[in-house]
Length: 157
Image (cartoon, rainbow, N blue to C red; front, side, top):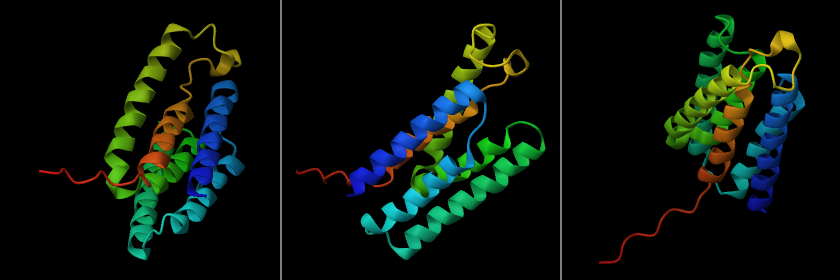
């Protein structure tokens, strides 16, 4: 059952990425779905209350930092909300990896926007905007599968 929740969450991330590419917006119902799916997945994975609280704290920190970036005009409001949802899944153990994936993905997207500004499928007024939701969705999908991955077996000597 956990794998079905992970697949559903991955599908939501794909939809978010596609929507952001086309419209430069991240619909709130999809972001809420990512959060709700984590709340469903956590008990299925036998997550302890302490671990659940750590994931919530990671999401809260991500939201505060991304809200500050939104306030400074660096990212959009949807990106700030999606970042919190991504880091809810990532938790403290995968947060650095998720941050790295988001940063590298955002950098590649920025280069693509600069190189193909005139061919992107958006209104001309938004052609220079980076669809950062794609980078967040990439990191989120990785977090969905990494956060509940089976631990590696101990080496046999």
